[in-house]
Image 1 (spheres, rainbow over the protein chains, first blue to last red):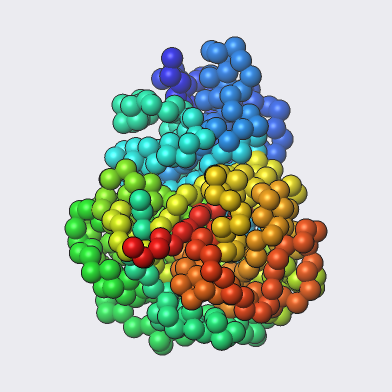
Image 2 (image 1 turned 135 degrees about the horizontal axis):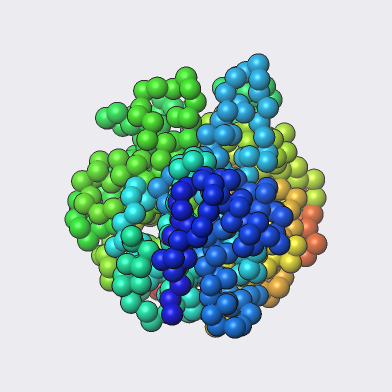
Length: 200
Length: 371
């Protein structure tokens, strides 16, 4: 069966089943990390966009691994692409970085924040965690347009080494407003049909 | 097959590809030292476009102005109708209008800082009805945007793609790279033993791509994007992603058909070292390697487009462009870098890039002979 994760600042659903959670926002993501992931302390260094994308990818890959009783797929190969989309780019990190340089008499540019002022860092975090050497790309759109997204996923399969694409919408406007809709699409699947699973 | 139909470069060295190529061939650069610029406490060396030289009608940010100026010229040269639904706009940028986040700047709506919104403003300027695609994949965006466009055209989704790479500099970007200690206090020295970091630069560069074959044209043969899966802000110590990307784009093309590898060559210690390892692993040590960062600095989202265009011009001119700023090799592997102009009869080259997030991209270009 096809697995998919849909989460936002108030709820987390894996394959359409909501998780029982007490908190909201970043506190909720931290809770999910502790209860479902727990073995990757680098999580706590990540910015909010990376945390959102990382948690979604972990829940998705966990569902995939559990159901197939196998090692994580594509580990150490170029066969899986990571292709993510959003509207806000790295706006949350950008805004935080801007605050460190806004006042001339309180000027303390932070390299730890600046490194996250690129949206594709989240694709790198997922590639590092899973040892994916395949294609990683980040595309910014002014809205979640499934036609455009499907076109770009089809694009990824034109690389002959790409067999599957971990893909979806990962947006973080600020630490209290975020969402992820993520799934894995395999070569030769009906892309638009698969994307409908994460639409609502 | 996907071919380049027209191109343009807007940079401190000129407002056309020809002006830029001639300036580079003559060894020119506008890399300058700025002290007190934008009230930044530390000086920096950068290649900045003179704001007065760019005039575009309408209420556009400087970033949008250089994008529109470059795209207009390339579209006019191509003779295509940008308002056609068979044309797609692909924008490559890392930071777009990020300078608008400054509290003191209020002449544009807040949402203009979003890359999709600024791309929409550009597409609407040309009356294009399609949703523009913004590739924001750090410093490799310019090659990724070409790969994205190439694939759409190969599949027949569109007839033409307007691929624009652009970034403008601002206190945001300069202070960030300063906080990383990544900037050179002098003009950058790619692959040199005494290199001290990169310089930042501004440019907008455009390529109109199409699926139609014409005589004596430039073909985009194969592109690849690969991740190091190693570190978000440092390149792989074994050049894994760049090596894999190079290997994929080479395919069955013999190394001796490649005129040169136009490297990223930012002049940071780690990047240039990593590229030398990737070039060695890909079996390309006999192929000349050059970097154009000594002429323009690191133009971020523009780099992949700008440097591809100049590399095509160089081969049109049977030339291997010198690596400005290079003197003595300072990387582990003996890559063939030179600071003097070279001659070539070969018709293929590889553009190579790497960036934060562990991403790497390569693209093989070949000039088809006139029939």
